[in-house]
Image (cartoon, rainbow over all chains, first blue to last red; front, side):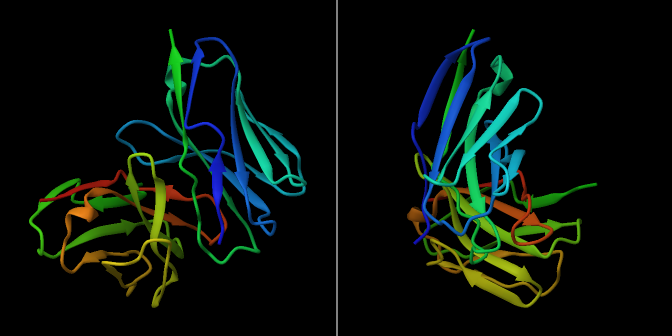
Length: 113
Length: 112
């Protein structure tokens, strides 16, 4: 079946440093990838997405990199702030999927002041 | 604009009781889904629907029933609650199957 894995369950960074959160996926038919952020006590919220015809997409302080060859994507957060503390999920999906939006376990980002 | 609304926010049930978790969205989204979230387990898909009248099972469907009679509503039913169903439940909706999902605020369910 499909699987989504993040490389580290917890990532601790110093405020102001850059953060990199990794995600591996198994379904080679996935062609659309979304990153979600979940703050404590809330539901996940969309951060940024990328389609398979791209290998990099930038937002405000966030960049997503996609390597389809090894089925890996990463979320980079520049100048990490205390408000970035949350659980981050990647969700691969796309036309090749069966309609099931599958999430991995998530990576908890802790920002130290 | 309410988005995705879940009720109740908190619920305590006794083993064997039944209840329905409500989910409603006002964005005219076709795709709706239910997840449960347990510590260290991430979000696991319970059931999903690609449109009114159509539902299908996710990763962990046992013990849960769903129906989709309207585009707006997607209730999740627990017929006989078990302690293993203690969890936080999230409902989500999206315009299409493979687009950004919008989540509700969650229902924290405790079964004693």
